[in-house]
Image (cartoon, rainbow over all chains, first blue to last red; front, side):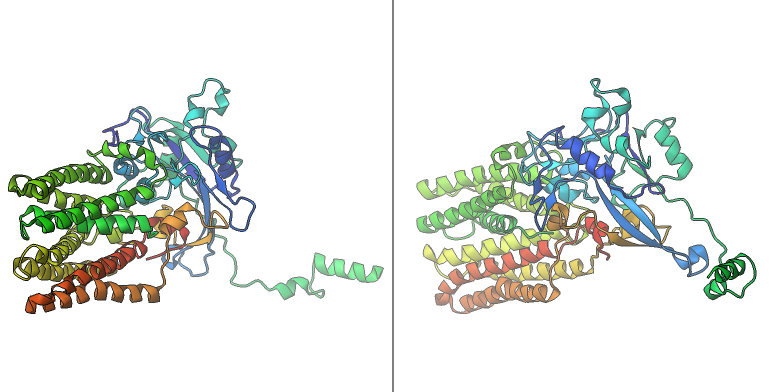
Length: 255
Length: 308
């Protein structure tokens, strides 16, 4: 059924810390590695070693430069900052990708809120990918079916793997510990408290999709009270007093 | 958005086919056998070719029957269901008319209403996508319905002289509908041009959830080569090419058919000109449909360096 559940018992999702993400792409690779052999059709690649490689990914990292506006920092000299931005399905409460599906292949589970695709029923029309404002869904070129993040549904409930591994592959692998998994419907869960403490945000709330995943904004950078320009010549000047001039004189004596 | 040929053929041909069904169902045109055979055949043919073209677009067309199941929520599913019901009702109407000479409004009027419903469903497949402001903000449904009815009326006027007198009501309906469609297209295009990617307030800043932090610029894309999202939804079209196509759409889709209609109205003996007007109009509508897709920007482009 492609009508959405009124409510879901749990809201399983990810909380991604944009302060600690270093943009290493380990989660991208771990995601591809697990999901190409797990749930549904493999994540195919086209021309992987050629001039124009292309492939299906459920998680991608964009790197942005954010230039602070003058009003915020009071001076135009504030440095721009880099934000590494991992993006995968946000498992929206009002998922537009689910309601447009003509076959019922796309659905949102009422138990845990995970949005999934039943690939045996998917006709590959691509309308769900058009409906998603976030670009979370990608059509697999070889299988002709829609692929998306499953929140590693075949890991998180999997009794055959050690308990520590029962989190999405991207979360398990993140070396910076920037990715967190949990129930965002439970206000006492670790992820909910993290969102509370760090002011977690939604992506494009104006699109009305009510995403479950949250992003933690980068912490404010320390305001270093540096002078406008540093006199580099003075630092290198041998006549100056102090350690540098002593070193210079000592080296000269040796020479 | 990527202007896939299969989708352009689907929306253009099914539109004109259902438009023709609507006019035939309302009882427009002569009752003669040859007109019935040709007009009903063309209406069913256009709609069927259009619907089959939509199947070429699918990754797994063998499962297309499943698309009839989710009419409660999905406009694409509604389109499928409505098409089959319309083709059945109109098919019965055509069968009785062509083979038994009975043209009953009891089937005709429901078929006409259903045909319009089909075109509304087609338009809403695109009109319901909030992620593409250029489709969801301007009056996309009235545009599709007006174009379908205009193409249908033009085809009907071109075929009517086969079994009846040239001129009269069918010619007037065609002329007026082409005028209405021209106006609708101009209204839609004006509104579409004003509708930017940020129509709902989306920007690269809201896309990454950090509007308070400053201006966002893409530094490095996720991959070195384009991916499915970019090919499908971040389609770029040259402004020069778009302008040329817009002129072509205006000329072929509306101006030339209008002139030919006016000549046929003034000199009914010149009605074969209308047979020429139908393919010319279709080519123009196809060009405008190409622009409809190619010029539409999807908000996912905000993650790939686009900005309104």
